[in-house]
Image (cartoon, rainbow, N blue to C red; front, top):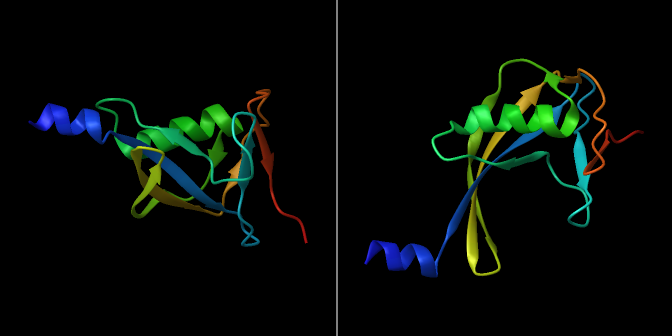
Amino acid sequence: MMAARALLSPVAFGAHALIVNREGKVLLARHSYKGGWSLPGGGVDRGEPAEAAMLREMKEELGGVTSKPPVFIGLYTRKAGWATNLIALYRLDEAARVRKTESTSAHVMLPQD
């Protein structure tokens, strides 16, 4: 019964970061595969801790970020078609990018005044 329920109502687990720099500005990412701006992050692999997944995604999407230790904010859900996304959200304070990414799949914006 549980397997049938999982097929009828799948859940994807993701981890994202609310990255705030010393000036209080929030870092947003724009991906080539979806429209608009969003918090950087992505999927959590099977057996991977959510915080480790979030840090991995920051390295993949942004080329790495230095910050104070991540602070867990909470778990959030959202419907995405017939599936449900479960998102672990972390806050990274006093963040700075280590280096710019060469990836064409993510464009990073730090909102200016």
